[in-house]
Every structure is written in structure tokens, then in C-alpha cells.
Amino acid sequence: MAFNKVTAYVGGAGTGKTTELKRLMLLYIKKGMKVLIYDDFDHPSYRDVPKITIAQLPYWKSGIYRLIHTDSQEAFAAISKYVWNALIVLEDCFKYTGYRFTKPMLSFIINAKQQNCDFVFMYHCWAWVALDLSRRCDAYVVFKTNDTPESRFTKKDAPYLEQLTEVHKLVLLDTNDYKKKLFKTKVNG
Amino acid sequence: MDSDENEINDFFGSDTEQKTPVIETTAEKTISEWGNDFDTKKASEEQVIVQTKQPVKQEVKTESIVKKITQIEAEASATVTIGVVDLMQRTILNIILNKKFEKKFTEDQIEIVDRVEDLPDDKLTPEEVSLKKRFNKSFAKYEKTGETIPFNAVEKDEMKEILAEYYKVTGKAVSPNLLLAGAFIDKIGKRVATIMFD
Image (tube, rainbow over all chains, first blue to last red; front, side, top):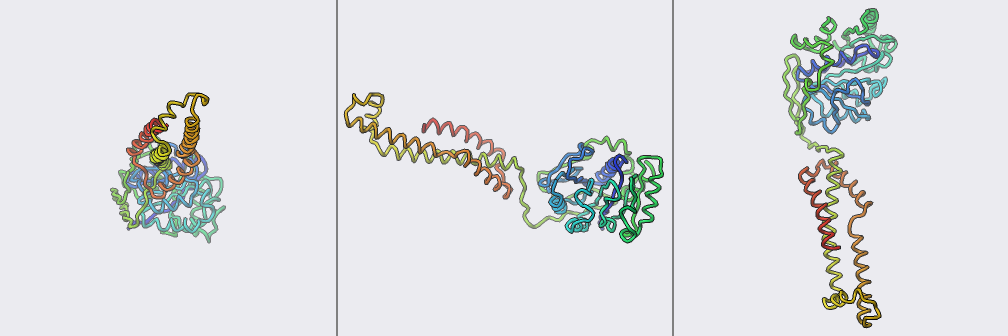
């Protein structure tokens, strides 16, 4: 049975998020999946990735594309309608998701399970991570940040907060600037 | 590859073979290696090879999905359509106008007008002067009416906008071959119309 993975990449600028994500994208391509990077801004890090428009989404067969569309609701509606078997990367998503996900956004994430889509939410710091994500997130890939998970979550929001904080501390203490660690939440098993 | 990357790979369900790429090479991967592919037909059923995670077959949607066309396609289709429609209406209306004008004068009268056209009035008979004036007045009216037949710039813009919207809504654009043919018919036809009626 297909299930969708919701992952958050949290790390400051220049900590290796994009590089790690590009590696992950290649894994998906090798698995025969598609990768869609969504942003409302033409991010320089992905200039080598070809663009796709909402109108072209129904005709997309394979590979990696990025969707630049200023109206995020319209973009999510199109993605949820046309994108199947894909990794959907929401680059710097605080800009368009805010602290709370809108109802269509939540439906989109939950319904994506049926379309075999995985999600990666990219955040630059813990303070910007949406509270709704804490309950839906299957894993965090923790990079170095200036703040801590405690600056965003309480134990009520994230029962795994203590363990997550420990992992974050280990990453911060590491001498490698690009240190990352995977943290699986207990909420979703 | 370090243990953290292995852990991430395992989480995302990769097999041993898929763990070979390293960060440096990945960052330099070109678009072609990413295997981008696009289909002109809607990918109604997706076939992918996966061992660890089997992609779900995309349901064939029963409702009709209107093919979306680009702004350029819509505008090009609208421009050519207006050009051809304008040409048609110019041809038809000019023929009607000519017939209407020709009915006003007999062949003998037109012959007289042709003969006396460049002569001063004092050298003509009163009947010839009267005929010449009537002809010139009618011809001026004919020319004025003829000028109003082609679509003006404002009309063209308005119709272009409406037609472009129509093409976008219906998702049907004029095919490239017809666009080309339409453009030639429009340009050459206008010259033919000018030669015929001006």
C-alpha cells in the first residue's frame, strides 16, 4: 500500500539543505518517481532545473521540474489534481504556508497519500515551522540553525520535542558545518 | 557517504544500488541525467519501475479536461482569425458596395464621365456638368463608405481580446499549419482586395 512521507528540512542558509535535497531528488528519479519543486520565487539554487507551468502539469511524464507560481493556492490546487507518483518539494515554504496550514493545504497533504506523493517542506529556522506540520510530519532532517525546536514547539504540539532537541544539539555541537541528522517522529510511527 | 545519508536514504526507501550517488556528483548532475520527459498527450496512466515503493496508477479521469493553451497560442490564433474574417468581410462588402455604386449609373453615363472628367466645366454642356457633379458626389460617398469597411485598430484589439479568451476557455487553438496559411491568406488577400477595389 502506498503511503506518503511528509518531511521537513530545517536548516539555516548555507548548511547544505539544497545539496542534500538534490541528492534525494536523484534517488526519487532513480526510483522512477517525479520531482516537483514549488516556489513563489525563482530561486537561484534551482536555476539548472527546467521550469514547468500549471498548464503543463497534466502532460508531465517524468523528471525534475520546478513550478514558479505566485498564487500558491492555485498552484496547490493544480498539483493536487495533476501530480501523481512524485516528490513535492516546497522550497522556503514559510512564505506561503505561514504558521498554520490553510484547510485546502491540509487536505492536499492528506489526499496526496492516494496519489503516492511525498512532501519535503524546507524551512530556514525552527521559528517558521508550521504548527500543523508538527503533527503530520514523519521525519525532520535537522541541519544547523540559529534557533532551537523549542523556540517553535511546546510538548503539546510535538510530543517528541525532547528527543528532537537532543538531535538538534548533536548537530549543533558537530564541527562539520554541513552536519545533518534524520529524526523520525513517534507520532506517525 | 556517511551514516546520516544512509539513514536518510533508508527512510526514503532506497535500495543498495541507489545509495551510490554522492553529494558532489549530485550537485553537478545535468538536466539530461535527471531524465526529464514531457508528453504532448496527457499522461493518463503512469508506468514507473519501483521496487521499494510501487507508484500508484493514475486514475483515468472521466470528466473532460480542457486542454490548456498558452497565451501566445491564443493570441496568434486570435490575430489570424481576425485577419481572415476582416479579409472576408472586406471582399464581400466591397463587392456589394461596387454593385450598389454601379447601379446608379448606366454604362453610357460612365463613358461620358470618363471623357469629361479632366475637362473644365465651362467647356461642357449643362447635362455633362450635372452628371459629372452627381458622379463625383456619389464616388466620394462610395469612397467614404469603403473606408469604414475594414476593422479599425480599436475593433481589432477588442475582438482579438475576446477571441483569445475564447480560445483559452475552449482550449482549442488554430493549428500551426492553419496559422501559417491564414497569415498568408490575410497578407496576400489584402493586396488582392486593394488591387481589385481601390
